[in-house]
Image: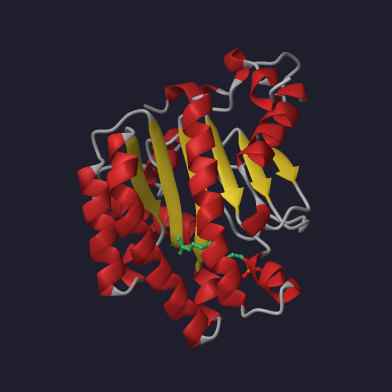
Length: 253
Ligand code: FPP
């Protein structure tokens, strides 16, 4: 039986987040430089997006570059940024034709200007698409995001637009980079590492975690499908007794 047919279409995850790990090890296994792994990782992103679109998953978030990744050797950082520009240039027209909306979260101002402009153009071009949102986390870390959100809320309080008593989950959610995006239902991390690594700490509160030993450059649509099938076997209780999603997931527009 085709693996895809084993998916229950009525229980699809609304948002899948992915920590793409293992590019360096994949390259090393082949006697190549780390960047060789990143280059092949782009094909894994392409196959994952294509498969998610076919299945009907509405949101994907890829952790492409963390705040901490700036500390990698300059050459690796520059090549990653070049890869990003090239991927946006090559992929955006096809993504747009297929109804994919591109979004980004993170400290985009810290990206090289060329990257930022390409990204902003791709976001603007695809902003009306509704079939699938591909969200890319770039120069992103969850602690940075939470501190930033706190600053925005504190500013509102300082401007007398909000009182401290009024601050609730919804205010906080709206101050995060992911405002308007539902929390992930499923997080996939490749390469066998069992960590969250400063990724979407607020949003992952009730997310199902899935770890696979597959290195990111080997990750394909079939692995995504396997993760979804495993997700559908889990019972989600959101800290309650009955399987009932928390209000915040439904409230997000
Ligand atoms: C982790 O592997 C992966 C990254 C730091 C970058 C992920 C980037 C891509 C898949 C390429 C596309 C890039 C952009 C910016 C769109 P690692 O290098 O930590 O691998 P290791 O743990 O085996 O060393």
